[in-house]
Image (cartoon, rainbow, N blue to C red; front, side, top):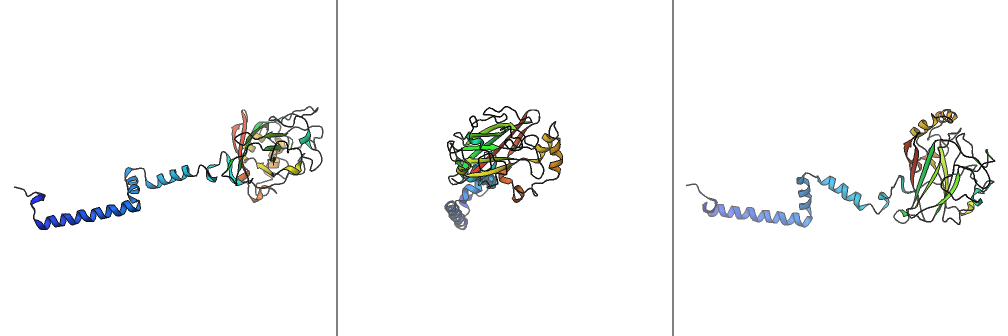
Amino acid sequence: MPKHDHDRGLAYDLERMNVLVNRRRMLGYLGATGLIPLIGCAQSGGGASGSATNLGSAGSSGGDAGANTANGSCAVIPEETGGPYPGDGSNGPNVLTLSGIIRSDIRTSIAGLTGTAEGVPLSVKLSLVNTSDGCNPLAGYAVYLWHCDRDGKYSLYSVADQNYLRGVQETDDDGSVTFQTIFPACYSGRWPHIHFEIYPSLSSASASGNKIKTSQLALPQDVCNAVFATTGYSQSVANLSRITLASDNVFSDGATLETPVVTGSVSAGYVASLTVGIAD
């Protein structure tokens, strides 16, 4: 008859006991160092590295890395020049004091002036976050936004009888504002861009001295190419061919934090979205 494990003699029994003791010691060591769960994950087919990545992503949702609601990030957006045509009282006219300047649609002139800026429709959504407080939304702030028209000219200056393509809005509970406008031109010497200033409140957005940040948006080249191929933008094609982000006097030091995500089409219009970090 075949010999069973329980009747192979004392030497065999002692060897088996030694194996079991060593195995228990090893399991106790692994349990103490927390390696058992990792071994289990690796053997289950999910992979330990994948689980670690997912946990890292979830864990960062309340911090800087999880604050990107659009292009841009929780990092402070660079300070840029307001240019020679701000219209905020710092260099001539002050549109901020005009009746009707608080608005979402900035395509028409206000305060007794008539005129509408023509061009491919563009919605600009800026979402303000506080880099000093876990990138939480900044509600109740004011954003003044302006840019040139389809011909590369600025109202109040080269188009003195118009004040279109300028407007102010208060950020909502999500720290966001959305402006309805048109896609700006590319004029000689500058990459296609949009200006904006940030004020601590709507009531303070009446004089440039109250602003806490000035910056610009750098519009993506592929979208610019599509827009500039349409009627009315022909001069922008040649101007864009002579400028790059690297040679632009504003964006040459990097435009990553200032380049919005742009979706849409020429026929349907575009939406440009950017998360704007400021240290409050």
